[in-house]
Every structure is written in C-alpha cells, then in structure tokens.
Length: 478
Image (cartoon, rainbow, N blue to C red; front, top):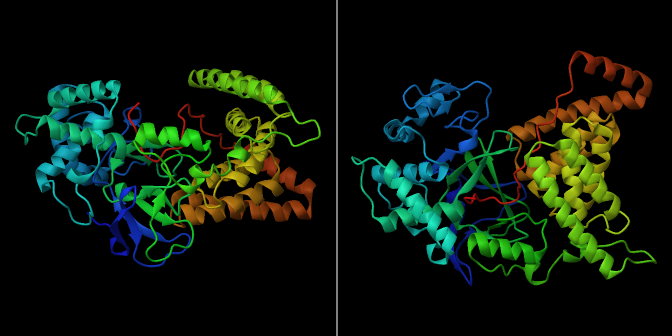
C-alpha cells in the first residue's frame, strides 16, 4: 500500500476533538498533502454492471468475472489487479448464490485483508482498523437493529474456512464503515459509484470552513490544501455541504458522525444571514409572509424529489417555476431555499435541452453560490463548470467562456491538473476561447459555423439528473 506524503503530517490530540492531523511543513493552495489508496473498497450495488470493480471507472462495455458472474472489469489488467481482493469474494458469492449488499461486501473485504496482514498498523497507515472509531454505543434503536441484521447477513456470507471473528469485532467493522466509509466517484468526479475505507483520511477532523478538500483521483484519495497552511496547523475537511444553515449542519453532523460541531462558522452562525436573506427594499416582506414562503418551499421540494425520483422531469420544471415565481419577489439571491430550486431547475432544464431557461437559472444560482461558498470549494467549481457548459449550449459564448475559466481556476486547486475533469475543462476552456475570438470578429459567421458544426455533430446531452442528494464526503448506509 503506497501512501504518498505521509511524512508531511503527524497525529496529535486536539482539544475537544480527540485525535487529528497537523502539517509538519508549509503548504500552498492546490498542494497535495497526501494521497492514499483504499484499505478496502467496493462498487455500490446499483452500479455493479456499469463500473469497474478495480479502478471505479464507468465504462459502456465491461468484462464480467466468469466464475461469480458478479464482478465487472475494464480489461484483463484490472481483473488481474483485483484478484487478491476478489478471489475469496468470488468463491463466497458463488457459494451463497448471490452477492450481498455493499456494506456486507466491504466488511468482508476488510476482514479478508486483516486475515492476510493482521489487524495492526499496515505500511503507510498512521492508524489501524482496530483503532478507528465505530460509535456503536451512540447508535439509536433502529441503527442497532440494522447492525444486527448486517452481522447476521455477514455470517451467512463469510466462509467457514476463513478466519473466524467475534460478534463484537464484526460489529466494530460495521460501525467503522457506518461513520468512516468514504464515497468514491467515477473517473470524472460526477457520480458517486462506490465506498471505501481510508484509515489516514479518518484522522482528519471536520470544520465547516476547512483548509483542505478531498478528491478521488486515479484510484486514490488526495487531501489537497485550499490555501496557505502553516507548519503546525491542524488539517481539516468538511464532512457536509456548507450550503446549509449552521443549525442544520450541526444536526446532520450529530446524527451521522456523533459529535457537536464547535467550528467558528457554526458558533457564530456565519453566513446564516445570507442563507436566509430576503429582499432589502423599502417594503420589506413581513415575517409572516417569509415564514409561509419557507414552508411552501420545503413542501415543494418534497414534491420535486418525488417527481424527480419517478423521472417526471417536465413536472419538476413546472413545480420549480411555480415556486420561483413566488420566491423571487421575496427572497434575496443568496437565500438557500431559492438556490436549491434554481439548482434543480437548471439541471433538469439542461437535461431537457431547454438551454436558454437553464442558463438563466444557472446564472442566478452561481451568483448566489459565489457569495456563500469558500472561493476554493470543489462543489462551487463543479457548479460553475456546469453553468458555463449550459451557457455554451445556449449559444451565450461570452458568459459561458467566463464561467468555464472561473471553474477551471477553482478545479486546478481542488482537483489538480491531472484529474480527468480538470483536463476536460482545459479542453473546454481552449475551445470556448477560440469560439469567443471568432464571435468577436463576426457574430453572424460564428453562429452560422456553430449551427453547421452542431448539425454534423449533435450536442452532447447532459446526463440524466440524479435523484440522489449530494453534499457529504462520507457514505452512510440509508
């Protein structure tokens, strides 16, 4: 297991947080502090046929394991690289007659690695699997029942000839997965496709306004600096999306990760005023109207989520438009309830190729995001990139190029120049720069050439909107 950069960090005991990691040298924005391969990782159940079980790349054509008929790989190289982790799994799936869920499969992969190497510190790890937090004592009754179901399913799956573990130890592993499983994305970072355990990553504490970000790149997670970090500074990442009120972030962190967030942004409720902002005009809306509109927005979001999960995208657009019509005279551009509707509407409109309306919604969304997010936030960069592409599709080359350049500057820091999405964005930036020069020289000729080019090569349709909410870096079993 090769872990790059671990000499640049060390464990320390942080007051009120327990263990953490601090820098042993200075870092600048975009620096990779360390890169770590997964201790163990699996593909999500619903992506089993579409994602390579070794490199987690999404491919149209994958090769299936001829024995278990479950695992899929890009090619022979990926299949060969997977064999050490898959051989026991392969036999267990054949014997059981089906593959268990992702949590069971991940727990088994962890156990098989422990069987091979022991449970102590492995090469490149600052902490062992045994020493990771499991928080089982904090589980509520439903979680406890779910844990017992997982343990029983694991025992049905686990081969009798393999090393046998105690019920307490198996429960510990499931607890570790529950609160430390890191979500893995596909090669372009656009879709969560799997879950893995990264022991060193688990030592990095949370802050709602962190100094680091985490990106899955070429089979490893990279801990990257978002700005200047001095030697001796604690390293932090955000476990949740900042685009939530401080009280909501604290509730989510308490429920999912079992701690009370005391970061400055939660303690001081920083930017809560922006996230709840209303129009600042002479006739300021009454508190009763604002309260009523917030509840209407929440009720509409429930209807939107239901329609989106059923693929009723025209119904989603209708609901969004009705909600925005009521929101826009009252809410300011940074209001979280309006930003959520704008985000969904721009995504769905792009998918339906209604690019003019999509671009208008995306522009308003980005204007709000830029006032709320950290300037080097990965989710901000991805949102600006999508908005730039949407404007390009709408033929708004000047604004589109500007957004793509802005997104590229952010992703160079959050993702780095070697990440596939950054490479894609660099190509888009070069293309839109060339088109912009052509547009400035002669608009009429530009649009004629664009029309001819698109008639020969259809526009790349946006991916189907996901019904999965995003915003947490760690995976938690539903």
